[in-house]
Structure formats: C-alpha cells, structure tokens
Image 1: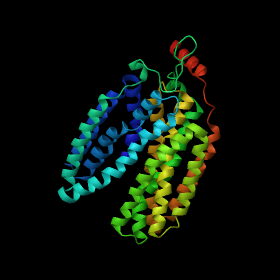
Image 2 (image 1 turned 90 degrees about the vertical axis):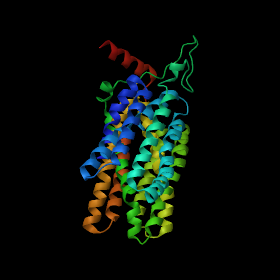
Image 3 (image 1 turned 180 degrees about the horizontal axis):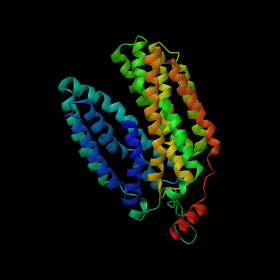
Image 4 (image 1 turned 60 degrees about the horizontal axis):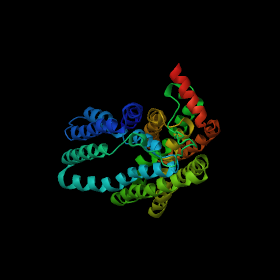
Length: 365
C-alpha cells in the first residue's frame, strides 16, 4: 500500500511543485510525513497501520522524490546527472543513519515512543528544509548552472518543457514508466527479502541485518559516481551498464549461501541500484525538458511503485509455495534484462527549439 500510494501521489506533489514551487510541496509533505509517523505510534489494529503508514505517510514521502528531482533538474543544465546523484544519495544516507537509530530507540523506549519521536523530528526538519528551496534560479535572477546566454545577452532558456497533456500522448513517457517498473521489480524484491533469505541460509539475524546497511552505503557511492559518469559518457550507455549488471547480480543471488557472498552481493548491488536512481529523472528531463518535470517524473515514478509493490509480493508467494527464493530472483533478473528491450523505443533527445515551439503551440491552443 505504501509503495503504490507514495509513487501514485508523486504526480500530485509534482504538479504542486510545477505550479507553486517545491517549498509548498515540501511543507505539505512534511506535515503529512509527521502526521503519518505520529499517528502510527497510536495504532491498535492492522487497518489503521495500512491507512496511516500506507497512505498518510506515503503522501509525506512522495515529496522526497519527484519534487526534489524536478527542482534539481531546473537548477542544473551542465552536470545534471551528478547533481541528481548527489541529492538522491540522501536516500542511501537516510537508510544508513535511521536504521540503527530506529533500532536503538525501539530497544530502549519501544516502537510507540520511537514512531512519535521520529515523527516530530521529521516534521521539524522538513519544515526547516522548505525555507531554503527555490523553484528555479530565475527566482534569484540567476541562470541554471551551465546555461549560457546568446550574443544579445538573452538567456538560452532550458526551462521550457513539454506539457503533461502533450507528453502523455507520446510513446517515450510510457516507455520510461514501463522500464522503471521492470527495473524496480527486482530492486524492491531484494530490499524486502534479502535479510530473510540470508537468515534462511544460516546467517544470524543481527548479522543478516547488516546486509542492507552495506547496500545503503554502496548506493550512496553509486548514485554520485554513476550520475557523474552519465554526464560524461551518456545517460543511455550508463543505464544499459547498470541494468545489465543488476540482472547478473540478481541471477547470482539465487545461488549464494555464505555470508561473504551476501556481503559481496550487497556491495555491488547497492552501487548498481543506487546508480539507476538518478538516471530516470535525468532521462525524463532530457526527453521533455524541465518546465513540467514534477508531474512528468511523478508519472514515471508510478511505474516504480507498481514494480516495487508487485516484486516483493511475488517473491513472498514463491517462497511460501516452494520454500526457496531462487525462482523469484531469477524472474527479477529476467525482467531487468527485458526492460532494456524498450530502450530503443525512446525518442531522440528533443531540441530546445522544438520544445519551445511545442510549448508556444500548447499555450495558443
């Protein structure tokens, strides 16, 4: 429920970002995030957890993705991949820091107090962070980093973008959604089940939990390094390398059984999974411009929500019926590989002149 809701709501908060700026989106999201965690501290029956964690918290978390990616894309023309990777590395850093903090709080104070304390902290930090956000550099009389001026001194604007109504009629937007869904299928399958898989292989529970910590650390490096590499050698080439690597790693995971193998897998998988993250928003901006980036990438992100919900469900079902995760991981590997078959269906990069013309035509209509 959480996976579907926060990715589906990404379109809404993306539209708010495009229309009113990221500050409004983050304020609303911070309130929802804090409320979801605070209410989760009071749940007594399962349906309440589905509602407050799955839906309310999902709305809060949705502002941490499409609004941030849209805002960064507007501020950077040159080295956009690196900028997106740096911002996205906050997700890995959060995984690394908050998992042990939450574990410590729960062990000493219980889960209700932990939810309450983290909820208050999240609300305060999100509201503080919103103060510093600006929708675009033009608000401060600046140009995006790497954007030049023409000989007359006028900015060669990169902020014009294809509208959502126009983009949704194009094949490329749907292709990006399907690709993100197929890639996310395997990613979240691993993130949900790898600890239990390690335990079933004989790894002690506390030791198995460190596998995700390694994934989190490696993903921080992967987001930054792969984002920077995409600026130098191209988004599509780097995406192919990451997805092929992910497919190989998932296939290998179906055979591992020793702790050192799990650690080695976590190291490489974290790097590759982290690297994939900034590539999809970068591709969205490249294909459609950044004028309506919030709602467009919110739409693409919904594909990740579908894959992120179905992948773990299928893996759990396969384990319950067969007693093994091997088939599930092989399916995840196959779907990752299949996603690359859609890559040639993406249209060529749109020129700014074409995007500008489309934007003018849309306004006239």
